[in-house]
Length: 349
Image (cartoon, rainbow, N blue to C red; front, side, top):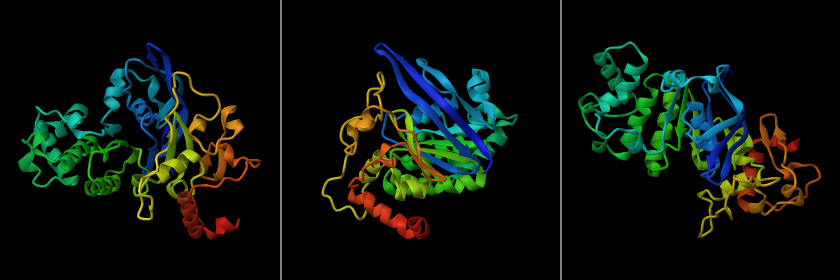
């Protein structure tokens, strides 16, 4: 597939009174045209900061200390603010978590949806409003034409999220970044929004980056998954590989914490401890203090990526040939069993 986005060795610090916070620590990933990439991790792992870099929306106290962000081979980190403004909403668009913080409560929906068209194209207001109606209908807003003069508070939470999506896609961006777009919605509306995004991906021919802390959500939308922890990618692969054949203990914890129909515990699992202080990142594996399977080497040396398959890699010393065998959680054994049943030939190898 043709590569549309390539992030190489990205490192970002935030200046604070206590010193620099090393929020993003040498992150690498890519996105191909037409695919959906999910970036998964707990709050504070660096997902949203990484994507705000792609949008050129970093806070004033942030500094990029290394790396490239190549959009179709062009490094956007070298662009001026004027060039980035022209790119935002046109080449790359973002859907934020809370639609009420994205929508102007004093402006009608019609004006807000039409605004990106008027900003980036030589088009009349009448033509822009006509396209706004078509886009609102595309995202599932009924009687869109009659509701152009309505305000955000006159719509439900799910409808507001659809309107935010309409604003993001009206210029048919090459990349659509969805930053936890279903978190504030109930499960039924979540499923509708996920189905809508996949449907729109085909209709407007865009690639999607889906940011979430919920691996259950990405199973139904992603082609590939990157797992982030403490500002680093620690496991990546095709969605089935990460979902059914996880290899990093942190990924195990995320999957254990996800309720399923097979969950028999009266209380849901929670990963013990808290993420490290990135004012002073720990030596070795950052997950070691929370990892029940941590070895001495985890506190001394950062693990490299070990190859699980041609498309699946994980940065954990447990994959080293000399690592001891561990008694993995029952939920992970269950997933490995599903993986083995799906891939008998690979299991035999």
